[in-house]
Length: 337
Image 1 (tube, rainbow, N blue to C red):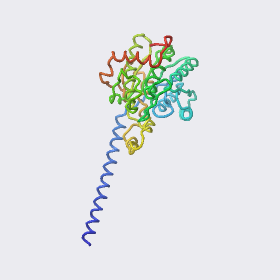
Image 2 (image 1 turned 180 degrees about the horizontal axis):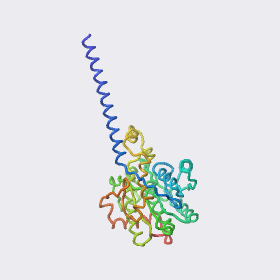
Image 3 (image 1 turned 120 degrees about the vertical axis):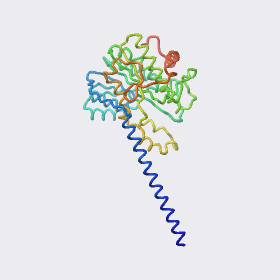
Image 4 (image 1 turned 90 degrees about the horizontal axis):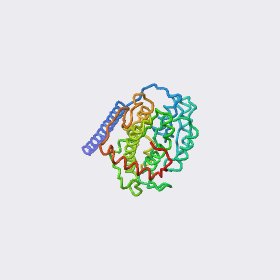
């Protein structure tokens, strides 16, 4: 009896010790990962003032868009917050005004998944604003399983992340050209590497929505590069660059359903960038004089990055541009680069 009880006690003690060591190793690993993320994250430390400048940031009621808008407001810019949800957008605007001391922060409704909403927003901006120094195409959506088709017959993820911004950029080009030198900043992602755009199915309403987020980022980069070429050819004085913000602890992960979300928050909180860290490259491309004349480039961590050759294919980019024009129903009298 005594012998078996002793063995049982030693066995239990060993399990506790092993569990404690495993927990300690896990914590050390997570701390190392977090430190690595912090040490390798690019930070824009420039003190450039944006007073007198007008900037539009789409999708800035939360996440990196909100942090971008907040930073620009602190620099004195007139910030137009283009948000779909006006309730959360209003709260974000009040917070930005409070922490920046800049009351020139305007909230306007924009649903990028609706071509009609895009046209209404652009018409209002063109009527009310005398200049536009920077357009930050930041808004994005990621659905995991739920397939949704918009009122225009477009797949929701592609409509919000690519086709809405494509139309919006076109409609705001006259104001951007009038204000030149001006900038267009497009938030893409290194996750484009997980996909490839099928030009034969540019509106993939029957595909897995989670995968289409990667496709939309691929499309963003193709759009950005072709837009930069067209703007350069027309001597517009408008630059266009795109960026990878990093893998961010943002609201985009709330769409991950159970049970895939089990343990996800631990990974997100320990391994991913904060929204403030994720906004740094957007801020850099919006503000820094170092990139005032740079166009047609891809950035991450506030420095130029490289892209796969297939996403840089000019022939495919030109074909895709024509496809986008048809999908957003671009009219003959609509602005062009």
